[in-house]
Amino acid sequence: MEADDGRAVIRRIRRTAVAAYAVFAVFSWIWAGFRGFLGLTCSAAVTMICFLWLEEIAEALLQPAAHSRNARRLTLRAMSRFVLLGVALLVTITVARFNAVSVLLGFSIIVVGIMGEALYSMYRSFTT
Image (cartoon, rainbow, N blue to C red; front, side):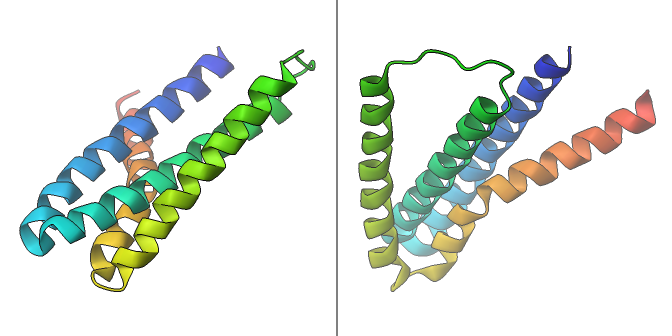
């Protein structure tokens, strides 16, 4: 029961973060053009990669028993995430010199997702 609740919370945070990205993308495209949109997209990708990675690490650490996983698969996944993270950071740093607002908006999508979850929890506490 508790594990299902945790998964539902993470799912709602992801959903709210994606909705925040969509709203910020429209704003960024109108206000700053393609460079702003690119900065938002890359910084949002960095944030989501880090959030999902943290989620996976926390889930692995909180498991009661160790799972036998394929070391090659884990290494490949970690290296591919590092490459993707590096490329997204490179583009983010390049674009940040021109449009810092879109980069900051991209980095804040998880914060918006967590704030959305807090509002949902507060709503549920009043209706239950």
